[in-house]
Length: 255
Image (cartoon, rainbow, N blue to C red; front, top):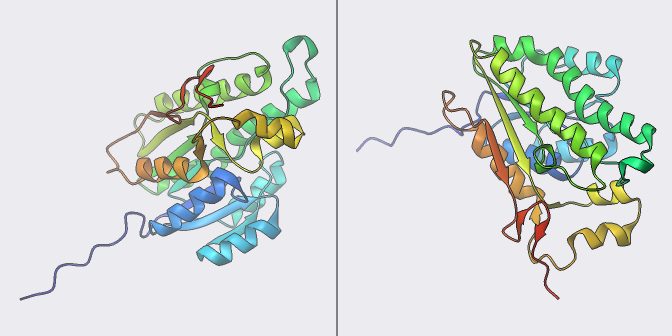
């Protein structure tokens, strides 16, 4: 009896760039895509963390600050082939009402989440098209679909990401590139809420009483699933929340 044919991993032969890969969803996504057989290129500012992760995964680590045009140019020059771009770099940096808006924080939020995403996507798009089966995946947020008090800077930025994904899908309809958006709800990571509030106790309070908020690996699982569908299947938008979060303001907390 002849041996069964070997089956390659879904990502074998494909190069995936993951931004914001030094922690949280980015790091978890890099690990998951590496396990799926992708050749993973990690981009972030914190090279100490990035280098350690890359060594563990057998991936490449390159410095990347999406808010700096020169950094983006240098990064792109070292990645001649790209099949997948996971736009994960982003974050929230305040929780102030509009009446108390810190415009520097607003500018930082837009620069990282929106302009930085556009900057890198524009730079890599020719290579993604040339691959013949490219993917641009945006890690958005339910904040890009629903607004809430105290979140205007972040919700406005993530609404921008959502619109960016929708617009690119229209503009690239005749090109061999899928445009995918994953929009997570409540995800507990080491840094997101802490960066936003600047206070560990306040950050912990965001998740207090929630039995099982999502973790980074849950989102990475959704990203990997969308990217490993047959290339004629486009997951336009996937909203993923913990079961305890029925909507932005509807969260079951125990105790």
